[in-house]
Image (cartoon, rainbow, N blue to C red):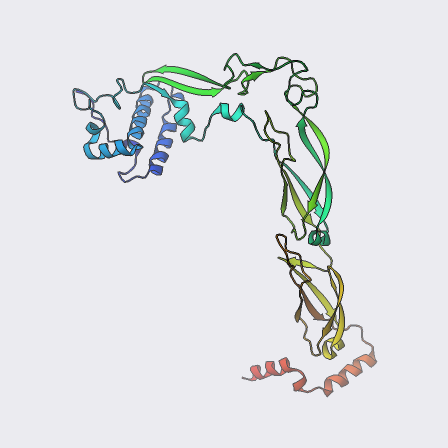
Length: 378
């Protein structure tokens, strides 16, 4: 009597409500675990691999899955129950010509070696860096950087062939860049597609390579590249110059040049978004009596009238004196925080003057001090 077939959901280790993604993950894990190439001459592993593929083929198709859910194995295999377990999907002997290359490419991230290696390819993207001052970042500038990059060979025009010669079609893959192999197993004939080793997937053989580039079609050169630093750029931002990177292959475009911008720290200013921050030290007399200050900005010095009685730590705003907007019109503001500097190294006469001043002041002259002690008493 033929052995009873296991439930397909049980084979894959999933529930009957499993989603397509859950089915795919389960199949992927088990197919890798029991692949015949990992277990040569292991009949049990081959049988499990066949069972796993059979289960996934039925459950991954919505129509056959519906039939299986309603009628079981008999719903998807007319031979089931008629003197044996039957074949899968109407094929005698189970698997026919089964292309492992196709199914494993689709499930394990592969792709066509021919499309990857034989068609136009974009050149490599290069990275470089440039340092600018705080003001250059704010208002923009032009810089030159040195780049080492691959460029099409002038001698052969990028073909890689010596003058007067051309590449020949690979005799192994006949220009496709891939080779298909078949292997007979107890489960049937397994086919797989691999990159042609003779031409490395290019589909062509260069018999007489160019002496300058040695058949690669490109040479490395040092170039000075001019780059515009836009106004408002910030430290760490990247500028992309399209097609200024390495040369492409087989007619493909050049790669990009990615330039990371570094901004040197400023001795007075700090940046926060499009705002400029700075501190301005003032004397006790300026804070108490008020004064006209000269404030540095990235545009130069400007005058600001400080009101009398200004407290240390007070911040005021200079509109439109910040960083220009990188992607449009307008500018940020500058915020200036005043810090009252306490005098040091006073003479005896100066100390006496301060004592007299302090004695002449009342609580009404120190609002914060008065409020502090009132709260302390409560």
